[in-house]
Length: 402
Image (cartoon, rainbow, N blue to C red; front, side, top):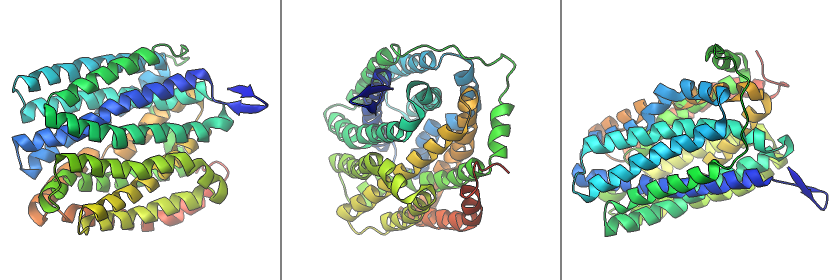
């Protein structure tokens, strides 16, 4: 942290991380739009579409805990840039194969799994490294800016670019992703190095046990698990809902994703102010409640404009939730445990995503393309009602330990 005119400012090392995050996620946004568009050129079966999405998130179930251990044991910046280097090579290879006419479901599954595995390592280390670069009083601002640049690039700027490039040549978005990984890795490699103090035998159980004892973070992690299950159950067939039910073309689909990002960016920019004004509990409850209504609205949308508005609303409250909960983890968890606790949190919170994607494909296949969002709204509403008493009690205690 530096000071100018007596006011604390974010350090230059954090700004390099911020730029690296934006560049990385711009390519990811293009990749996010291109993968489902390429998938539906190969198959229109919702089950196979969901299979590709499942492959992207499966690493969070399989690799979250090992990634957390690595983030506490080794230099976090080194882990991040090496993971991105591998992702760059994989995305570049996929671009070449697609350009040569080799697009297939197995190729997309392998690519999605490999990119997802890199995201697990990079994302876990990036969450853990932030308190090393930013003073605690500035963490809400830093988290908000990270969320803002992430959602702006991965949802607003990247998807339209990916859609436009896909319209020119299917391989171009994958090439863009490879370049973004490489440039981001070069920036991350300049971050300060810090040797970790974790013994080789310091196991994953420490992080899991710490999270299990903390009533607030444990409750939030379990609630996140149900919510991400419902979220992926719904979102996995969004491309089919938009293109087949509402007759949106490839460029329009990218614009829809950009509409979701408008809300997300706004949430990232104002979330710290919202939390400072109304507090953590009202912010969390507002985000969760509005999210239920937004999912129901998406499922019942009568046109692309209505769909885009509900996607934007969902983006706003999702970002508000992410900023609040990231700040809670960084506030409560000791630095030496932050990687492992974050990975345990994400395992609990994201581990059901592959199950949600597969379930969403089956629900859409059996009940129609609107049904997944309505089912997800019901699941999220029930989870909120069940968790509400525990969440209120936990947030009213000092540190939330049971």
